[in-house]
Image (cartoon, rainbow, N blue to C red; front, side):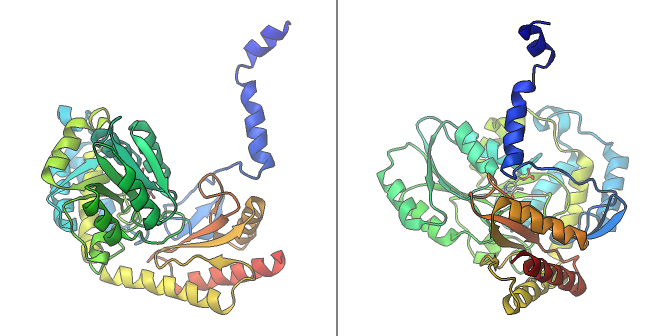
Length: 399
Ligand SMILES: *Cc1c(COP(=O)(O)O)cnc(C)c1O
């Protein structure tokens, strides 16, 4: 067998080196396979765990009322949408959901997307081109970064929440259109973007502001309406985006804002036009979810009590050298630093029946590997206590 024949029979062997390099740096990722429904308590490989990994912040993903709504939706509309929204995939269920979402976030109009990733790609590429500029927080979600690259606009990144740097970038820009993009709640840090100040800059420099509220929708604000309600802001420059697979417990995403903006996205966003519509049964489930969110003050109260309890215990007996980040949201990251140390601690917790994901670069900056603790209203006081005990013991063993 010649060398060429050898290569031809293993055409992907060139990739092995890359995978080995991931192993070496402690960056190889793997999956656990759930045997149970997604909730605060899960079964993996026959073993029961308390999970602090989920974005299902209100415990709705497995709610009987949502399951019933999905079943009724399947009975009425079938399982698949069968076509894109603009062809013949837009059902009455989607239409009703868009109206409900717009009313819920108190914006003129809303447009559904199949995922948050696709919504972000669609929004930025529909609004910007080569003559334009986008100004992005360094800690934004990967989908926003990819959107900015795909739009081929000038892509200016500013240090996390650094308003002075953002202002300098805006002031010197000669771009035709300017768009500021930010996570509303930062997905790996849990802190909230200074949206009022960003809006003031948007006003001063004639920019638009895209707020990605994936982690705020459903949980922030007294009524769960998200970051706009939480911060008490409404502004015509806002492009509001949120996902429906996190606190809403289902799947999908939407964009809301000005009527002309939404009409433009419907006409121009390629990830809206060239993809199959979300199954209508999911739109039925989300509509039910919005009702539960609107009536979910008790769920949000339980969630904030869980957040308070975690912070309180870990402040009193913090595992030495580990620090919770200054987050007031359901995302409570505990920074460990080293990649392998983070996965080792996550393994130790798993041995105790507690699942917490170790988040490593490139999802977070190098040297800031962390346990990303996600709390839910579905966690009990005991669950949080078990987590804290396991963390404290793992901290002892570690130092
Ligand atoms: C999860 C997430 C997305 C992507 O949403 P999907 O619906 O899961 O594709 C976008 N932005 C942020 C900030 C997220 O956390």
